[in-house]
Length: 410
Image 1: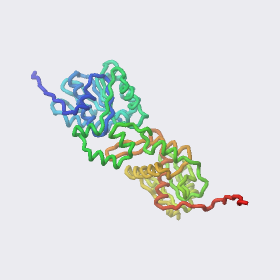
Image 2 (image 1 turned 90 degrees about the vertical axis):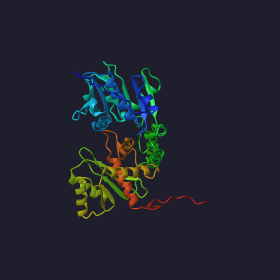
Image 3 (image 1 turned 135 degrees about the vertical axis):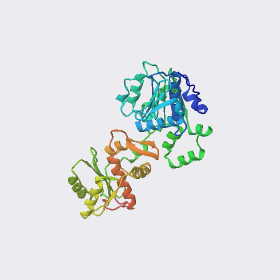
């Protein structure tokens, strides 16, 4: 049988990439800037592990938050390797290299699916966004093999296992190493351009920019509104008359939420309920009366708004949600919160707002709540705040207030 000779040459990596991935330690944690080259370095490391130490049937894993993200790395590795060194299985997102080792690309959204195998080396990509249970499952698969692992990702607040484990590694835990790769490192290596970094700094919120480009965790734990700013907006429910309403309509197990702001932009009415659509429309009519209201007109909400308008309630206006329009709405609310221009009572509104976090996507930064948390109250508040500004409502000064009686000077 003829033997095939293959010459492997590692792709060019700059020194910080080499140090972060190709050291002797078994567990390496790397907090890195977006687009700093961590993915290509991790792919080179994993391929070398499979190619140099693998044999028939040995498993090597790449784990990402969801399968769709793992497949991005899968396609990149296929494109970067010569066709004669692997056999691809697109349905399983796996590559079988010449020695029989198998590199499989998996999502972490179902941690139970990660138990059972023996894994000889692994990469955890975007670790700050992977479930902690997935890390627990992966760790068990490395027990018998004593396989090494490279855990990489952007910084995303302090409320995740990746940030905690990185601090353990940074403190010098035996068998662990810690590395940080920033945008400045990537620029110095010629991987990124300074003008691109400056442009990102101009358009991104400061705490988001520092996390994504300088791997510095926000003191607000990745909350886009800012915990301190949220606290400054908390005030008792206003007893003044409503000036404008925002309505977020229920979807599936969510809540319909109506929030009214008074003329000074303080929450003065707050309703949260789950009712059939007929009763929901009647409740909205009764509460809103003839005041201006901005309503979620997405999906069935479009029909609800049309029926309300047909019934003569012409001051109801629809707002159609899409990924860009929702982020624009959240950016507007963020500005109001950070200026302490809007006030809301303690309770569900504050709890939802404090549960918000950001995610770096292919088209920009996306704001959303943590898994399992509702965002109905925040969306209703954002709609009301947007309508308040659109209607240019002027705060009342000294109107409908009881006069303050003071004794005359004798």
